[in-house]
Image (cartoon, rainbow, N blue to C red; front, side, top):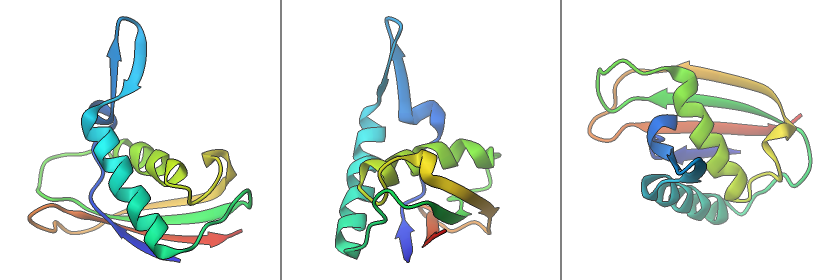
Length: 114
């Protein structure tokens, strides 16, 4: 299956720490909600099966970004959106940085049962 998602927030803005407790920020919750809606619209899920995932990231601008920093929030949003039960089911993961896509960037995700 293929999903076209908004460009994910970085780990630094997805999670927040307050008084020693880590929680998802408002920006992270909004992203989770968007991704959950897109997953639901696709009508496909993988349940508890192992999955292979390919993520193509099209950043919104030329700022330097760590590829793996964008991946963590995206995978969390896919899990909580119901695409699969737990991100420990991911047995193959490919991340690819693509060209800039203005104005907001994009993430193209391909998921197959492994």
